[in-house]
Image 1 (cartoon, helix red, strand yellow):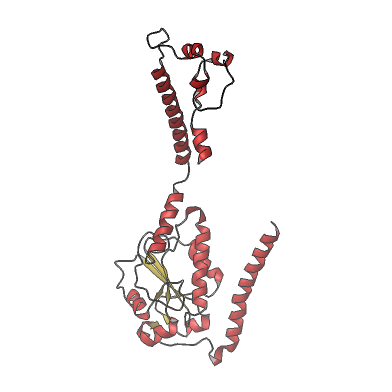
Image 2 (cartoon, one colour):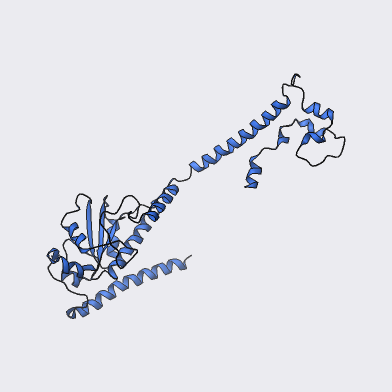
Length: 291
């Protein structure tokens, strides 16, 4: 602060006439803030003439002129600073506002544009927004059609589980690469995505986090915008939904992951899903080695 104040002020000596440097002193100058105390009478008269002389610059005028020059210089520097600030992207202040909004109110969706449409509950994953089977049933039945423009139900179970019974209108996406296709689709305002697996304990939450991570990456230059800012997790998964709303399942059936007739299918799809993840890890490792 001190250095700024020093550089922001104008040295009073800059305003004195050039002949000051040729003047001599009657005594050794003493370091002081008052220049006039080390001047002889003749020097004072030469520098600061009376108001009625032809110079037209009396002592008062000299002080006013110096003060005016200082203010003018400060004003110019302020204008320059404002000019530089105006060139900075406005998104910086917007990001701060959104972060503050999200910190103060957890009910806002991830881009801070509005509140969550669906009522949420505290589920098994504190970082994710969870909804009950009853709320999802209301979405499927059209109770929220006036509040949302579109919805997707993403079933992250393996295909044999999905074929053995799924929520009406759900899409089967158990691989990361299929989740990425969501980000290639046209987006709509007020659209929601609901993830689940058998119990919504592992596969569903992982895919939900994966989508959000890739969505952030895709929109990193336009933070906090997202393709899918409003996503939910079905609490306790398909098992809980089937137990409460079987009429909204197609077919009306529930096939668990550990079904005895599908042990081979289980091994096959586990290997398939893990191989994609391993491939992604190797790809990122190769990228890291290049830097």
